Length: 253
Image (cartoon, rainbow, N blue to C red; front, side, top):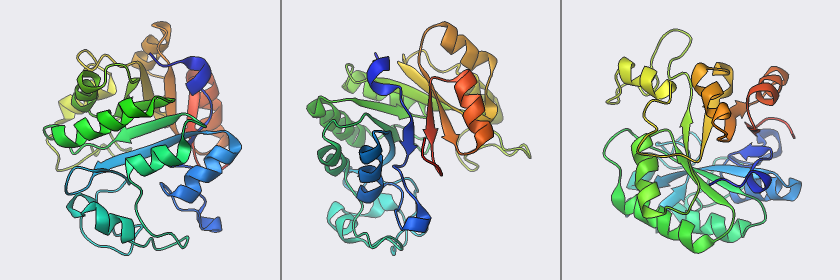
């Protein structure tokens, strides 16, 4: 269960990053800035080549770092030495690094990335092991209900949530093109119809799609609803009306 009094506060998306100040998303300076303001932290987890959980959003390295190729091809030792393009930062944090940095000062929402294939049991087992050892405010979440169900089995006492949204761009293009997702399944995921086995303790839903019949049902059931990514005054208004906490970036809440 997600303790509302602990977890429901403004949550800094990938940390309190700010390109103008050279503070890069999902890095120690971004997380330190969020902690200093008392914000919750949202971050992303992907496996290194050996399954070690790394704190990184993209599948490919090139947008943020001096590296090339896939983050999932990196060994942890190489990830620790890889420079970012901005912010004078070297090294992708491991999940263990992040937990040591935060040490319970603010809640963490760790989004486990998925390519919509069979869940990586080795990677998820290590995420679950670290989460159980942490024993401080931490929640795990993913777009992929199979991932959420798996971490629920591996770490049943850690709050877990499903991330969702419209699953289609304005031009009708489905999210994750080239993935195994069909349009029918995208619509089912957007309607939160695959929640059963995952048994989520909370949801995080796209702010631009709120409200929906599914999210209103979630709130009537008493489950916390976060919303992402809140950037504008309009987003903030929607979040205040239709969600319990914003996952935000680009301003200070």
